[in-house]
Image 1 (cartoon, rainbow, N blue to C red):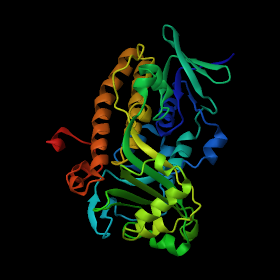
Image 2 (image 1 turned 90 degrees about the horizontal axis):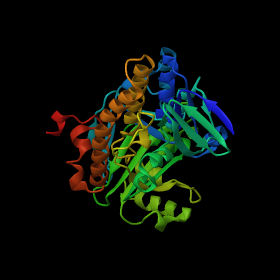
Image 3 (image 1 turned 120 degrees about the horizontal axis):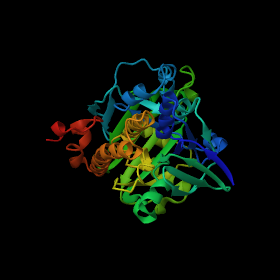
Image 4 (image 1 turned 60 degrees about the vertical axis):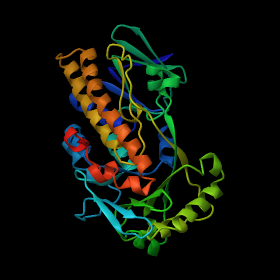
Length: 403
């Protein structure tokens, strides 16, 4: 059996795991990142979307080297945009009227793909390593076993392996780790348009606009996803994310053609630019459709600090408040701080990881619950006006704001 010895085993090469790795590298703490996908499949898969980055940017600033920090603008969905309107625009989907300029701390829209590429630079990543099992056979050591009869041994293991985390299954059991389903369906896809259409779709707000339909209870997020050349709008990519509660379910729309028909039906009842964005889609487009899920963080036995979770592995949440990335970045920064305290001999591993979990768990539970409330309110016009985004925007909740 092939084996690698390292100090910190990071499972998952998403934004959380990669930022953690960058911080450990800067601190001189040995680590290895293990990613289940191959380097080639990551490039070719259609998982391409934008993410809301706001208060979490603080943790990128804390962890990244000056060289990488100076290049963060490269991760913006439109790195050429110089506008000063730093809000997320919320509209009445039927009329197009702006009903809220949602505030946040330096809000921006970043490309998931570009952010991961930047955070990967200079990082030791072993691709194609699908985790099979975890063992703690000796004090102070943990072993991760992967497909292909390969294992890695380290002082501790941190699961950053996403919403369907194998590390979470190890900690709480397969059934307890299973994400909780909702009756909310999510269509999320990239699409390119004609040059004329692409220019028109920049209307209302050039980066992102979210429309709630007062009559039909669905939500349509339209955002610029990729601008490689500002003078070639025919090459721009947009992201559409449409959600609704109740039927039709994912099972009802198994046929890709039915999904396109449903999107066109929904979009036809929206004002522009959402109407054009949805109705212009070709009939043969393949649109990913998923059921909305979440998982509420609970107590687990971290085996004296040797195994823990971060990011979506610890607290997968619905997308309706745009918080997942920001909490994941905070998790990573706090874990870097925890591991530095262990490395410097100031704390034991059990103490440092215990303190991380004590902070992370209630913070994440609060956000998962708030986002769940927002998701349900988003599909009910009356509830929407009293929902978290109207009270908090995309800011972090505080005791003062909740009262």
